[in-house]
Image (cartoon, rainbow, N blue to C red; front, side):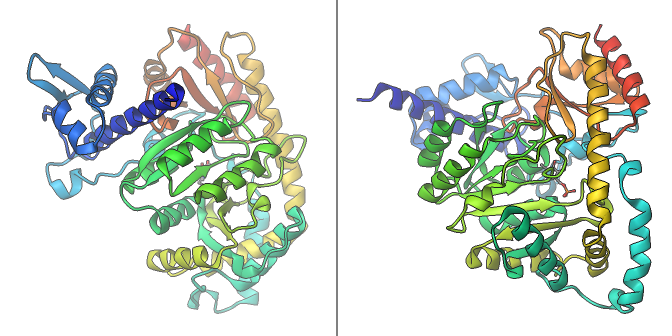
Length: 469
Ligand SMILES: Cc1ncc(COP(=O)(O)O)c(C=O)c1O
């Protein structure tokens, strides 16, 4: 018997049981003080060993998700985060959805390090408003017209030529679908390809609003660690083999929150693994153009010859969040057909006016000038934040692009406590737990340097460091 293999399998089963129970608690199917199924009955139901269930229950207890009553078994703990909108109406409480990031962004603060958004002063506002006028001159009936579901043909043509030239992989305009931001793209993908209890692979940590989308869809979540070396491809293969996931959602370039970029050699191998195990790769590339010195490696989709990759490219972050223009590239007709159905059921196509304004800006020379200036401004802000943190014993890897520092706080600093104190002092950041698909506490926090100006970065970080003292 291969002992290592058996141990791995037990580890994964245990994780699955843990998540199964947690899902029920989060969806309020099992409420505060409800008794969990006995170890024996859950083991029988899930067809796993009793020790596997016991181990999962013990970890849930350690994480305060459940508690034990002498001789009576395990019960749902009262320490779940309290949802102010919670209600006793089962149709609402059982299916309550969460967007942890947007909850954090509700706080009005003076020093905003929680928004991975670019300072509106750094975006091309003046030029975009000039294009608005131009679009109405060119297309007087633009507001009286629907876009097609797939998106404006002229825009798709332009983008297919742009990507084809940039990455030397020819595309047809019908390989593109215009969406209202990449958030909608993630949502459409989950609707089209994930059914409740399907397994979805997510990076750990991962973009929080994607975690929330897949969880709301009822997916079982399995995780792949991401660190400065990228992924452990053996782990990816093991999980693909064991769980047969429908898809792996990844953000391989200037990853949110860590800033990591997956090296080129792993990109090709990932496509091979995805093909072998028939697992869609959903490559979310919201930050590609926000590099400081060197452009990042080619996107994963450029290695794909079998139509296994769905590429999501947003332009919201660094051109115009308000226009909400993003694009999906997908070279499998069958996949595109499913996405088009989802898109038509969602909104029948993104607003034409936004697409036309974006088109005129995107095809102008202004775009490259804007990106060049923006990269310098972002790099300066990052360096200022790093300067202010240099005297602390906080740890981070300086990113080569993107909008965030992913910081490990010293032992003994509770990120939750710091968060509460910071908000009281008018400073926001995102505690690392929000990015953990398994929601375990961590000593990491995400600080975004892109939203506030240089002076505010200096003042806000000084205050934050003072609070930790
Ligand atoms: C990795 C990632 N994907 C998607 C989004 C959503 O962006 P948008 O819907 O504005 O394109 C974000 C925003 O923070 C993000 O960080």
